[in-house]
Image (cartoon, rainbow, N blue to C red; front, side, top):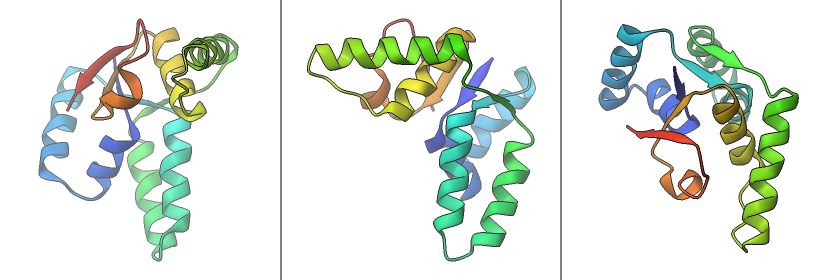
Length: 130
């Protein structure tokens, strides 16, 4: 199953044509997913915006079409392992990115993102660039 990262979700919400074609492909294959962390990032941005009510409504509409995968015990353990390993190598990663990766790895999801610099250092994370 494909897991949509925040950058793709934002592009969808902004009506970017390239993002729509990716979503169409995902819809044909199977129901798409995202993580609870990505969902938080989308709602956070919507709540900060000048058109808060409209943007929260659009975010909810989009996210309700996806399976939102939670941060559970095994994915939080994997996220902590990722963070610790990268920090020990002097390559710290944002906790949100580590949690997204942990959820994707533990649920055997392919992360669809353009943030290669954020995620390319994580072993065993299946990625697809959109």
